[in-house]
Image 1: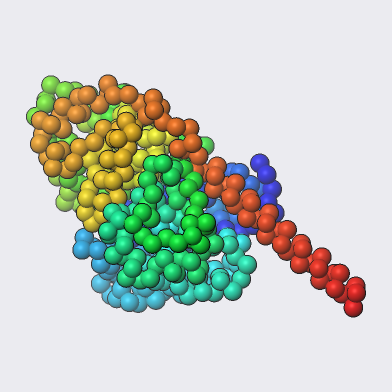
Image 2: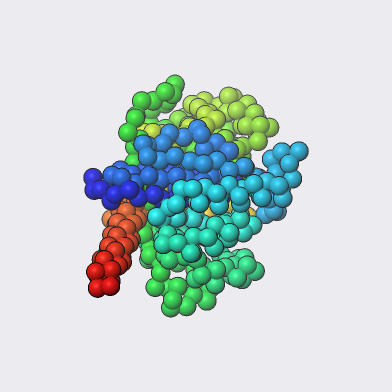
Length: 410
């Protein structure tokens, strides 16, 4: 483990829907403190369940008020007594005050360059007057090029990235997908982009399984946070009901954000079928991934990284609304023979999905074709951080030496 000195890293994760942003930030934070002594990381998060996760020493989080993302893409308060405008004002002030007090050497933004409804701009303005290195982290796939252009043109996002950010990390290999395709990225911004590779996931250091009745050789069915995962869960149950002769164990993890009515309906349907275990939520999904024979999911970023990291056979049924992110990722992964895929329309036909589920254990693992560099994301990030801190130290040392020489001459 290397020592970087007293280095402070502040991360921002807006977290309005699902678990993806927060879990990605947490994975990066843990990799950093495992690699370097003397580094402290604080994650600013809007996740309602951030406290359900374990954190390594020198990693902490600041909770900002949560909002919910509606299916029409708008945001709303989770409280009947506090308006969305009041919530956003509180978030903006907490973020800025945290940055003022913490005084980060590095500030990392996840996915949203300006934050939720621009809530990061005052903080970015403030940090631009300091020597803080400001980094934007983007998923391997953001959305379709047309949707990206529509959303980013509206807020003049590319110019704001040029104004505020020293570096753009893209959490995937350049040969897999280029998320800024279709946007007018000039040479100045291109020179700031670093494709890191996917973020490898590993088993937690504490591996005790405080779980009961885990079947052997099971297929794990997961939809991440579960806020929009009920359709896939019910499709899988319909396929199993049709093909009742198939008794391959299924372990279904519903996710913390699935609505209670869907949760109850799925549990009731599952109870009438053999060899199906249902969990509401498991914060340490790595423990389940490691034991699973195969995975069925929607191809969110974290699930995809876990499938590659634990070398699991996978069937993905991606959503296409409100974003095409999952569909693009799953389609590209299928092209590279990293997984199997069905559209949601195809998966709604029980016979089609049942056949795919039966064939799933016989697929090749991703390692049959996976390039080693595809999972180098955390290593690349740590190396880039080390280079940034060392460059900052050399610059600071140079300024001190120059001031000493000038004082001596005077």
